[in-house]
Image (cartoon, rainbow, N blue to C red; front, side):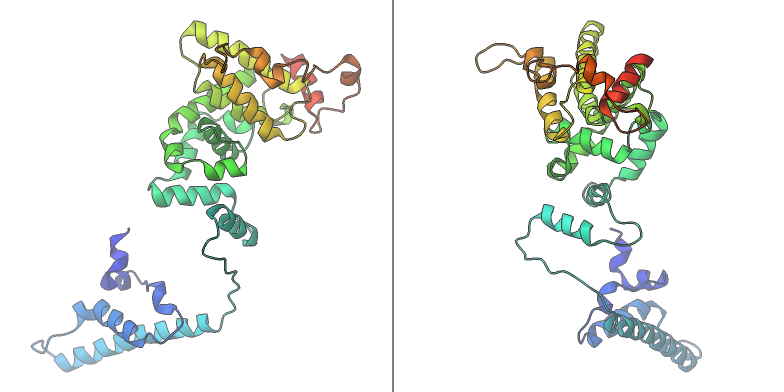
Length: 321
């Protein structure tokens, strides 16, 4: 796709020439064949009036196209095109990361750009259109963090992958598209929950590590009022515990994934190997022995919340709440 790209006549009528005709090597016969095919429909027939004049005109057009191809080939042949050759057994993750690191133009490609191109190539859907629709329908989500990151991190967690670069590469892109409505619904509910807790935007958010976790957990929370109310209380405990403990001061993605898995087990009513249901004491961030709440002295020493300070912004959010 598109089909016309494989038809010389349709290419030339759009003022286009396929890139393979500009590659190095002796491909004169291939160029002649393509030009003849592209101009075949306009070649005059011997029975036509003023055949010789029309044929001369057609030959001039043919030479002009071949000259254009020759000039472009000459330019490309003498242009310095740096490249890095990777072994055939190089993994996809490594190749993509090398490509991103080497792309040093004025606007380097991000991980989201690569995944977007992969989805559009495989699924034939525009991730940009999906994102713009999400932003138009739920404009408050963007106030908490960049949409591309939230989309990828939440999608990764829904597929039980780490909300980091590796997890985003590893997740199924087909499944990501299939889960799009669930993911967007989770993100919208996440934004509403944070707003209800007195955290209106990114500048007053103690840590962004909680965003994808909450959004992904909403996918598994039932819509029945009693159940949703019960588990939203659990989410609030998780939220404020994340702010007033040291849980997310390092290795945030790994810790977020661990908390997410345990919270998901509680929401789904799963049992541990010994047959005992999962409960709040199993969630690392809610375990006060592992992660005690900040003491009064620690809170008195925190920095000004204008800086990216988890505890300082947590205090500000608590006051707003």
